[in-house]
Length: 487
Image (cartoon, rainbow, N blue to C red; front, side, top):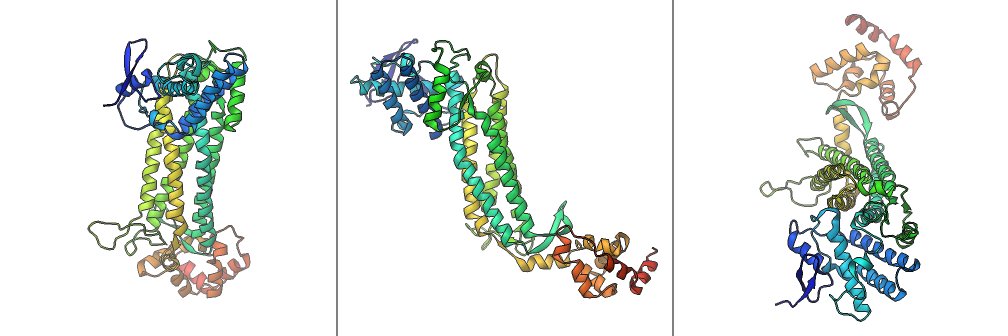
């Protein structure tokens, strides 16, 4: 049986595992909030540790703490930051409002370890206490939002790195596929020609654009109200505490944090998290759309478009032998759905702020950092297990293009809209390609026809060949056809 120690709080006595670095507050939270089994991510724990370390440094510099006490807290916070007490920081992400259990869990661990450093047993809380020392100059109400900001900004580095790599991977494919002409589609119907490279370059550009939105949006998280304590008023803090702790946090984290001019506002206004989450949702939208396109372009192979081939990563069916599915694209799509759902949760949590405090910071943290985690992993997976290995089916692209009537738009400037429309009807009726129908009419020689339908003319802006237009208009076959159709 696990040995217990007895601790006292304002409610009464609490039994705590004897070897635990956490204390009575955490023990009660463990008992009360057994909801999901999901614990806080590492970045959040690290951010909390930075805040506790910065607070101790600040209080020592302001003469609030004795140096030996502050240094013990700082050493304990350093150990907390590197994860030495992870098995003591295991509270459920669904917990009491404002994340007070998270804050007190960190306070108790660091206080007990600091006392241990000073030669005192765990649970004695002397000379270091969780509230009057580790938490001095702080409140859960300014600690949690600041920790979420720092954690998200730390996590942003890896996410944006993976997004950049994803965009570059798509761009490399765009270069490789730049000369492959294919059918472009709108409303899932044949439209006009496009190159496969142009499609992939558009995907790359979209991802780059999403990355810029994330960078712009996350900049709002640099504004912090640490030192505002309970309501943002700074009650219990030294007059110089707030700017000094922000400066110490800047040094510890390497982030360009800045103290807000309006700490009372940031105590309840969590719109910065909605803005950041929305930028993640935009990336999710792009990933869903690109994954969907890949699934369509790779459909078949015999009964679909089959213009690209996605890499085989696993068997596609438990019953259909040889079937291979677009598994990576499907996974990316589901990640996108989850991020969109997380964004909705964050928006509701941000919206439901009352008077001087938004109590929903734990669920904001869970969903924001959770979205960042799965997006980072999804971007890496999408790149390394799918996009890097996509191949183009040149023959099928050419075959579909030759059978399509999407060349009509390229012919229209030379033959006229009405003539071209009639030729399209004839091609459909006779089950011929549009090229064959036009070539058979002898409105021009095949060299001129090939020039009109060259990639240079049909997939990018190009000046009309006015001499060729005049030449066609003088062609007897063309003139006869125009009379035949009544123009």
